[in-house]
Each structure stands twice: as structure tokens, then as C-alpha cells.
Length: 327
Image (cartoon, rainbow, N blue to C red; front, top):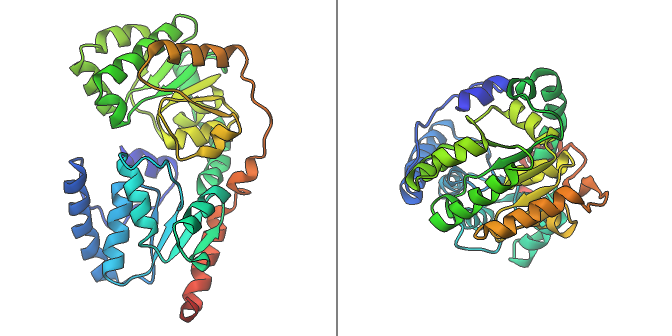
């Protein structure tokens, strides 16, 4: 599916494809570490830039650190404070292996300083996802036909995305989420691009037929179609960190089906509601209440920067490359 993103976003094809698919966290990270190390030895880069909190993020940071190549982490400093989440481990280890830490928010900066990371390594630049939201949001308006294809009216549906293992691998949570969504669907259509992991989980629990008869299940979509679905939803229900932010960028109320989030600012501002995913009645109530009265105030979107985070990242990298003896 990555081909869709290279085409839609007009990104040049990479010079290397590692060819590493899914697997256990240890297996996947270990294979990536070995493969990335080989590339770094061959290329001898000045910097290794890693983004986010995936297994590939950690593998890239570790491979570079062990080869004494400086590491820059974009989206540094996020914390959910739940060490049971694999991504939380990836975030912490990557941050403490990095030489430059590009934080998207003031909260992220405070987290890093609190953990003892030297202040001169930490730079508040804003969120590159906001950069992308501004650019590709306008592009989606002119290029995406997903609404007409699905027969959807703007603000006439709820968009849902469910894929995290803590929700898909737990039978009770999976049933609660989808029973809650199916009750919501009796009042307003719920559109759900179905992640392969979620499909397998629904089939495992013998829920797929019932859910497919109720919700508007669609295959995974490309980035521009996803942006269009997000922008035009009246509400988003998700367990995705990225979708939480995009909901805010596009001014759509969001219900997050998790116990905690790394994007705490959104909860504090009232734009995002954390909802336990183990009770269908609570899920239904939160969604219904938000639909009746969103109770969301206008807030400063520049907590995530001014849309030029990528420029600031590049500027810092080139400054440090020219003056590395200072750091």
C-alpha cells in the first residue's frame, strides 16, 4: 500500500527498500536494525533523521547511535506515560539516543527536560503533520472523489478508525467498540476504513458479518481520500494518534477510544475526549453527547507551530552540520 502514498504525495521513490514485513516487535525491530546498519555503513551519512515512534524509528536510532552517526528525532518528547504501549518504549529510547530532538509542542519540550535531556539538544519547531495538513488538505479538495463515490454528504457521517492491538487483540474491547459504533450507526452512518488487523479480529470473533451489515466498511484508502473523509466528518472516533491531530487541524470533534493519549493538549483544550473502549454504553453516550452539543471552544492551533516546522528542522540540521564542534 505504500505505493499509493508515494504516488499521491509526489514523494521520490527511496533508494532502498528493506523488504521487512510484519512480525513480533523483537523480530521486526531486529531485522530492521540489521538492514539499516548495512545501509548506514555503505552511505556514511552526516545525520540520520528518524520520525515518530514506530519500530523502524527505534531501529534507525539504535543503528546510527551504535555507529556514532548523529541522530535527529522529529516528533520528540511525546509521552502517554503508559510503558505497556510498545510505542511509548520506542519514544523514550529514541529520544535518549538522539543528538537533536525536534519537539512539536511546549509539553513535549517539558517532558524531555524533565527526563534530563540537555536543553541545547531540544528545539521547539512545531509539528510537521500540521505542515502536511495545510498543504494536502487543499489538494484533497480538488483531487479526492471519495465522498461522491460513497454517496456521503459533508457533515453527514461519522468517521471511525480502529487498529491498535490493545483494541483488536482484546475480545471484550473489540466487541464493546463495534457494538457501540453499530448503535451509533442507527442514527447516523459510520464510515470505517477497515485495517487488515481489524478485519482479522472481527472474523476471529465472528463479528464481521454483523458489523459489515451495519457500518459502512471500506477498504483502506489513500492519504488524500483519508484527509477528505476527515475534513467532512461531523465527528471522528479513533484509536490513532495521527488521526486525533488531523481531527483538530480540520476542526472536527474527536472521540479517542483509548485510556490515554500522547497528545494531551487536545484533551486539555476539550477538542479530544478520551473514552474507555471496554464499555459500549459509555462509547455510545460520549458520541451522542458530542453530536448534540460539541461544546468546543475556538483555540490556538499554533500550539503545533505555524505550518513551517519542516523548514525549521532543516535549518537546525544544516546549522549543526556547519558547526558540529559546538555540540
